Image 1 (cartoon, rainbow, N blue to C red):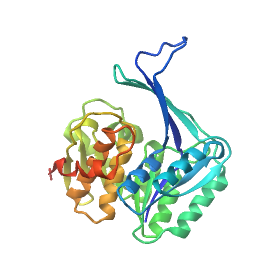
Image 2 (image 1 turned 180 degrees about the vertical axis):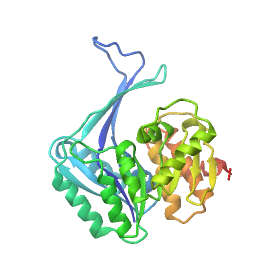
Image 3 (image 1 turned 90 degrees about the vertical axis):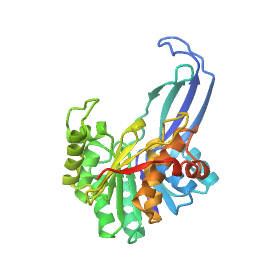
Image 4 (image 1 turned 120 degrees about the vertical axis):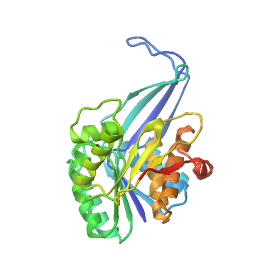
Length: 313
């Protein structure tokens, strides 16, 4: 079983406009729609679309829970969410279609009831089995300590399951103590985590040094996201692979990174060789970027063989 955890879910309210928004003025928009969000939820939906045995777990606000449960029921996604007083946060994403610009107003959400955290920890202790995969992703809601992923990581290790993390700053720094099987940062996130000044152009030598610092702190494998330049995979045995990107028209960047992680997890759960695992990762990220929301299986698998994976070391 694959479990994805979302401790700071969101409703993404997408607003489409054809001209710039003028602050302090009345503005009109062309269209809008809402989708459920949160990195773990996005990853679970991609895994579910690919046919993986996955369950999404986490915390939702009582007052706007229905949009989540209706979607989970619609796509037949197994889930176990604990309810918290208040609303799940709403993120407003204003997309200017004319100049392809996106402005975000992200909500902060509810304060978490500690009983819900205890319930999640107990759920992992009860349900996890050897070789299960646990995917910990994204930020946490207010009231959750920065060591939560490390606490869960220790449970995962005790159960001899596989720990995968996509987070940053103190959440990532703390969970490295649990030696996650995989982390998926970009360079800006690495710098924020290690408290190093970020710059636009790192040399290959500098990149390798940053990744090695993460590995020395506990990361086993590192999938370094490089945006439009693809990604680089640094394995626990010292191998390095450069992963290309799929060709297509960018429609929506939201969820592409979560989809990439899901594609990797899908390949890992099927014991694919590392080249094919990385192809699924890049294909999943690309397919979501080329669609309005999250990619379907057909869209992902149509791109897998397009992805070039080159072994550098």
